[in-house]
Every structure is written in structure tokens, then in C-alpha cells.
Amino acid sequence: MRVKINRNVCPAHLAFCERCLGQFLKYPLGYERRCFEELVDDHSDVLTIELHTGENDLVLALDEAQRRTLANEGWAYFVDIPVPMYRNNPK
Image (cartoon, helix red, strand yellow):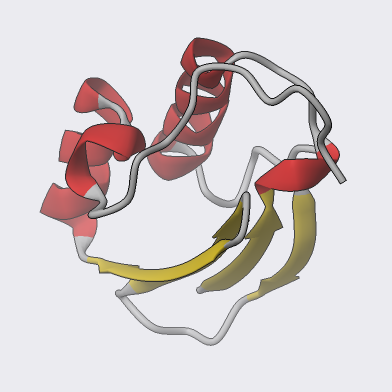
């Protein structure tokens, strides 16, 4: 499955965002949020997330074990960019 997410369209606090994405990572076919721009079932066992946050674009390719880890720990810990708790002016 491939998902395109634009975090800038949702003003939620980072903790809510991590919980929201965590629910999707646990239940990819049964959970969709307003920050999702595209969701394509490509019949792959790997979940590819194209994530836009702030001025940054990231691509995460996750197998089932990695999805569970990110769902439980939060995605922001595993990326190489600073992720702010709040966004003053999301666009």
C-alpha cells in the first residue's frame, strides 16, 4: 500500500498526530484521516508513506514489524528531521 500524507493540513498537536498515524499503521485498510491525500492499494506487503511535514518530504517504507514499532513508539522519533510539537501557521 502507498499513502501520501500532508501533515500541514491538520493543526493537531504532534502527540495527536502520532496517535492518529499509529492507528492507521495498525489498521491500514480501516483508518483514514483528513491529512491523507492519496491511498493506493498496490498489493505490496510494504507500506510506503510519502509524508510532507513543514518544508520536509520523507518516504518511509515499512514492513509489518516496522509498522508495529512506529505505531507503538511514534513516527517522529524515527525520522532525521526536527518535528515541532505545534505548528503556528500550517499551510
